[in-house]
Amino acid sequence: IDRGHPTLSAQADGLHPAVLQLIDITVRAAHAHGKWVGVCGELAADPLAVPVLVGMGVDELSVSARSIPEVKARVRELNMERLKTLAEQALSVG
Image (cartoon, rainbow, N blue to C red; front, side, top):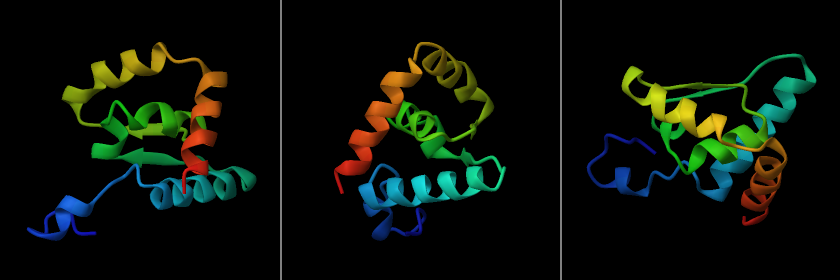
């Protein structure tokens, strides 16, 4: 969905189960071939998305300079085992 579209942008949801499933497929395939996966933009800086993305195995979050301190602090307070469980729960919603 075009985030800049006046009507459709309201429907853009990076945490939609279908979007998360596509990210998960990408992470698994990339890691199977020794490649890293990065997510950039608004989703990478979303405080609700960060734990799910890290739990799915996303290797890098690329965010604006002003978002770095918040995202960095959020990642540091997270427990990887709990994140994996959270990611599994998020993926099972769809």
